[in-house]
Image (cartoon, rainbow, N blue to C red; front, side, top):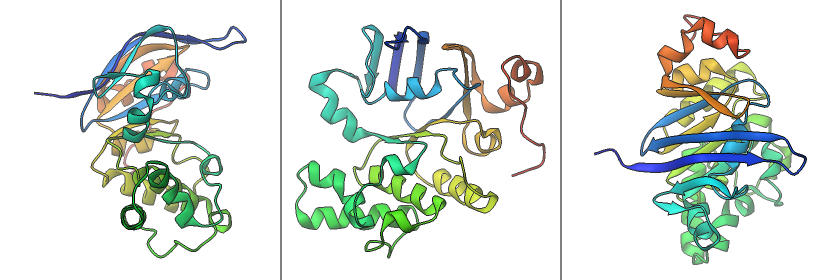
Length: 243
């Protein structure tokens, strides 16, 4: 039986300035799924992702992760299980060395030193950045920074990986290398993106948002080949034949 790892029911969210970013969102994500969230700017994609580990919380609707409500008494657990990778890696890299950044989460979990080193080593190997422990993250390329940002959440041994525009600002080679890296991670993945070629190659399910509402939710091939649907929401299908 499919295990429901994310459950959202009737979620609405309005920012303090009165902008309604989410409007009655309901969806379920099963363990092991790779789900893309697409839509025009301002559709609510990033706002939705920020509800998955409690950075944003709304009194309107319900969000559950691994069966637990995203509420104060479960936040520590949920944030250890839901790894959120921001669009700009600079938002996650703030330490003098790569090791310190990747070790930050395990240290705050209270892991012993040997386990911290093991977690850092494993996370860096998963993103193909072994040997970078003593490097300054601020002197790395954009692609390298993105990999280290992913490693900072992998060191927490999450069950869900949530990424906001992971391929933005990457050159073509770095973009496809990152897609292959993500494809190899055996985690539930939720990805907000405008990169529909990445969606086609990485995600079996796609959810189209616009003006805070879900307007389509289905198999990626069906969504990405519906030219009329995409055009109605400011999107264009990926180039046929590119992989």
